[in-house]
Amino acid sequence: MALRCLATRKTLAQAALNSTRLTQSRALQTFSLPDLPYDYGALEPAISGEIMQLHHQKHHQTYITNYNKALEQLHEAIEKGDASTVVKLQSAIKFNGGGHVNHSIFWKNLAPVREGGGEPPHGSLGWAIDTNFGSLESLIQKMNAEGAALQGSGWVWLAVDKELKKLVIETTANQDPLVTKGASLVPLLGIDVWEHAYYLQYKNVRPDYLKNIWKVINWKYASSVYENEFPSARSP
Image 1 (cartoon, rainbow, N blue to C red):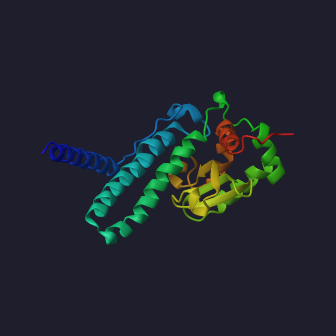
Image 2 (cartoon, rainbow, N blue to C red; image 1 turned 180 degrees about the vertical axis):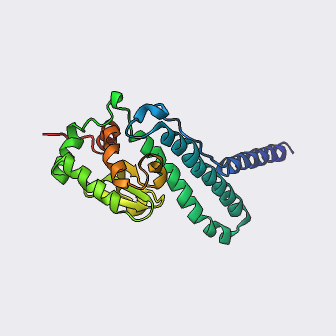
Image 3 (tube, rainbow, N blue to C red; image 1 turned 45 degrees about the vertical axis):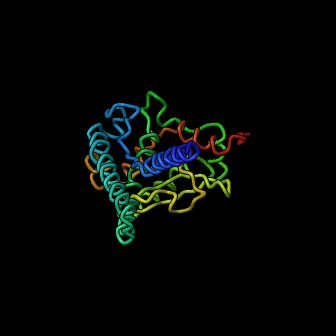
């Protein structure tokens, strides 16, 4: 009798543990708007405070809101075994999730001039840029050309290919994150060329926006990402 009671207690305890694990595994993670590391007007005159506030509080927040909604719907569809809805939700998750991922990188890629924005990269990243593109000026010209030529909305990226161990320039359409171009690509610098990133200030003249944004590019952040991927990289 005692042994049966002990076995029953063990069974109930294990069932409770399994239930807790199941609940934890099914917990729904949500995302929130990250704070900017600078004031909205800190990037002026390159990017106006009005644009930064709208871009951050309205556009980025909308991506997050819709991403969380799609994830909640996905969570419910999976629990119901609704494969059709799971498939239908993939485009919304890619678009809004990509919007969140891309903008989270974009804010870090910018810095006020007084905090080093626009200062050229040094060290291993500066050397890698010279090696892969000839000079920083050549890199900027190429990225500006790619960004200006991108049809519709999207992003232009400076990335490091971890497999090839070289810097590359890529573009992505809409809010596609860089990983859609290859799992080995790590974004160092992403420039948003959606109209909401510049239209209030530059109207439809995207090349002017691309020209001026380099004045507030945070090369220190890009360098830290590059050195994290290649800690043994050294400039000559």
